[in-house]
Image (cartoon, rainbow, N blue to C red):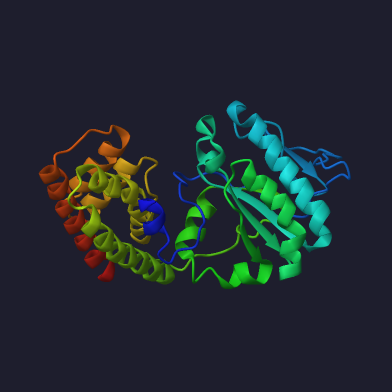
Length: 305
């Protein structure tokens, strides 16, 4: 409940856990989907492991996402097939992103984020997809994000953080690679990063007041919210010309080095998240004060970039 309240302040619901760069999939056409609902590999040409070329299209097949994700791989193929059957020529692309792409050995359903892009998107088009999406989410997967091709191209300046993260780790499962040639403006990236960090800090302050007298509530507030902040801290390293490290703690330490601030509170909270322990109320309050100070200093640095 705490993290939902914090995350809901003004950001697009896109990747929340794209931990590392990954090779994107180059697609130059459209995928053929059979009437029976399976993605058809009709004329496989030369392709890398885990992929097949169909009529000029590179399609992810087999277990490229890892043996543990075989069932989820089938679910994704079924989703793509059903969307294609439902939307026909209106479906432009289905793109999978999230930590399932970067860490396939540890895949969970929540690690698969799906972007569905159509040529047009009316309420009637949403109704066409409704049963497919309801079954997808009922199976435990996250609600997809929906764009038209035109909207996606016009939204890069509004959601540069989300699209920047997505571009580092995604797979095109149907249609065109609509992200490949998209450039993310560092000016827009800086603006959104500051906007999101300031908004989430304001929300964090409000959530602190009812949680302050309970060690467990305050600890949970910090351990739930720190991941959301780290997501945007990565964008600061991108603005400084670096590729953020895989590991959250490594990201935070590197940020502290680059901004010349004490990032120890963030490290402490990330460690507490990985290895929970009970803190005394005074300890939790002290950690929050240092957490708050670190975030305040970070935002000031972003304002001056």
